[in-house]
Image 1 (cartoon, rainbow, N blue to C red):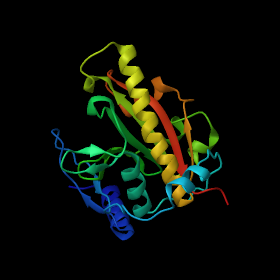
Image 2 (cartoon, rainbow, N blue to C red):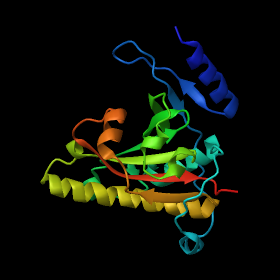
Image 3 (cartoon, rainbow, N blue to C red):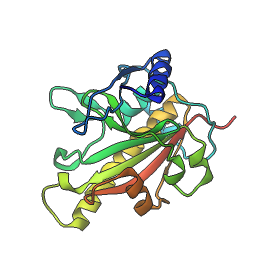
Length: 221
């Protein structure tokens, strides 16, 4: 039976335009899976204008991103743009696609699932403050965490896997920068992270390594 907290979350998400399902895990516990609105794949500012406007900003409004904006952001960052092959908006060596994209928000920690363009709830706690050392990470509505899964790179040393994972995370980060420039959002990519503590809270496997984090939100008014 769903808890009162789960039902309250369901009501809020439905009012906001989310579609929510509750598949059961192997332990019998329910896990929230939020189906994102279809991404808008047309419009926005011209590429050259986005490159002109691209910048890092470190002052954010606490206002939440709408489901539509969040959907577009995640698709631009690391969505599937060629459904026949499953290839994405960001490149990866040998198409390894070894980056897991997490979102830390006031409502908890979520994992982006590109195949069905949805969010899987990982934690219900607000862990935004653990995603970086700067104060603004606690205020901004979204902190993206790029996690490289070394297990999905079948060859090479750990140094090789760290290099590829870092490059893959950087490609995604630039997609986010360009999307934010197009949509008038503020963003900054960050490396100042207590990786050991954050990995423990996120319950990552030893093969999963935190590469970067990136804060996204509306500019501070």
